[in-house]
Image (cartoon, rainbow, N blue to C red; front, side):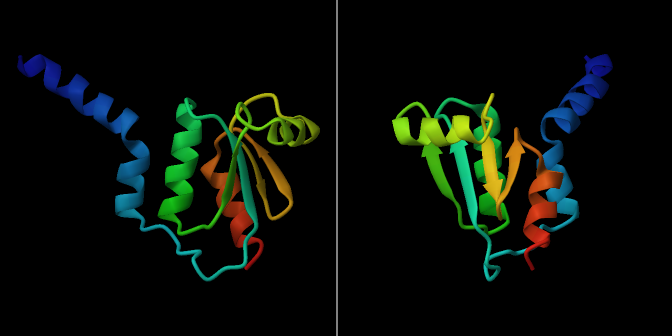
Length: 111
């Protein structure tokens, strides 16, 4: 049984790294910043959920559009070059996929 403990610890570190990182390094608060953030997503996408959680943790107000529910959102998603979700528009810059470093870079650029 003891031989499995290191594997469990490694698994927790891998799967919960984002949570551990933000506990050690508190996230910036963008609640007073003037950011324009739009996310094109689906209800079932795990990376979309991570992006939602990340934006909420940063206190970033954002508009979300489900590309499977809204034909208009789907058109805009495709116009922006969407090949996968989430696709984000952060202060006029497109982020394809879930990238915390890009989100922070584009949010901090607006301050």
